[in-house]
Image (cartoon, rainbow, N blue to C red; front, side, top):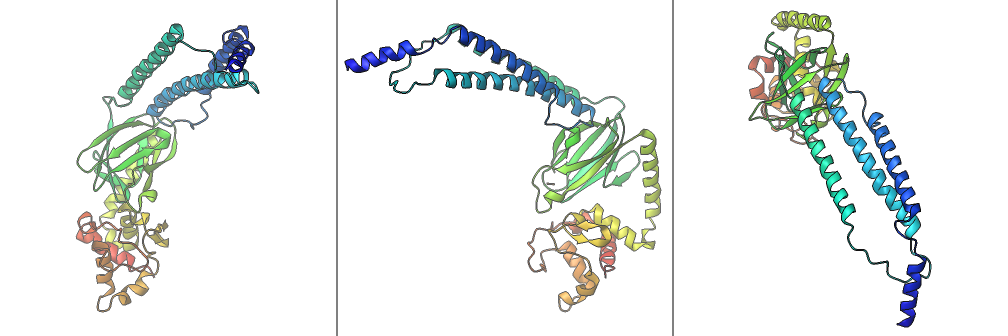
Length: 359
Ligand code: CUA
C-alpha cells in the first residue's frame, strides 16, 4: 500500500503541468493552424467542380463556409488530441492515476456558446439560401417534367412541345413543374446542385438558372426499378439565339412528324427513345445499349417463330403491352406493365412496325 502511494506521488511529480507555457504556446499554434486551414479549405474547396447554375453558386458558397468551419473544428480537435497523446502519455513504469480534474467553468462556457453560435449562424444562412433559390422571379419560363420508368420527358406548354432532353436559355430562370407517372424518381443535375423528388400524387417545383453554356447530365437519383441506373437525360444550356433556333427546329420537326407514317423507321426510333425503351434494351438502330431486357436487334428474324401460333406482329405487341406473358429466357419480369396505357394504339402499332424492321 505504501509502495503504491509513493509511486502515485512520484507519478504526479513527473507529469507536466497541463496549462504551462508550452501548452499555451501549442494552443496558440493549433488555433492559428485551424484558422488558416479553415480559410484555405473554404476558398479552395477541392470537392466540387464549378457550379453551372445560379442556385448552385449559392449552394456552393454555403457549402464552402460549412467546409471552412468544419475544417477549423477538425484541426482544433485533432491538434489537441495529438498534442495530448504526445505530451501527456503515461511514462513506462508509471502506474499512478491521473490528477483529479474538476470542472472548468470558463472552458465549458466557451465550448457551449461558440458551437451554439455556429449552429445558429448556419441555420440562418441555410434558410436564406433555400428561400432564395426557391423564389420564383416574375418572368419565369415553365417546363413540365414527367419521369417514368425509365425515361424523362420535358413539355414546353407555351410551344406545346415534348422533348426527351431539356434545353434552357442561358441566364434565364426556368420553373420546372415535376411529376412522376408511376413511382418516386429524383431529378438531379450535379452541376446545378439541384436534386428533387418527383412523385405520382403531387407536383414538385424547382427553379434552375443556367449560368454556363454546356451540356450537363440529368440523373435519376431515387432507386426506381431495374432501369434506374440508366434513367438519364441531359440539360443543354445555350444562348438565347441558339435556344430559339433549337425551338424552331423542334416545332418544325413536330409539324413534319404528323406525317411520320411516311418514315416508319425515324418515327419508331423517336418513340423508342421517347418511351424509355432504350434504358433497358439494346438496339443498334437507336444507338441503345441497355442490358436489363433482351437485345432487340434482329427481332424480325425470330419474332414469328417464338410462340407457336402467334404472328410476329402479335408476339411483339404482346411483349410491349403484357411483357410478362412470354418471358425471354434468363430475363426477369421487370418491364412496366402499363405501356398499353402510356402509348396510344397508333404509337404501339408504329413501334411494332419499327421493331419488325430490325433484321
Ligand atoms: Cu427513376 Cu431511378
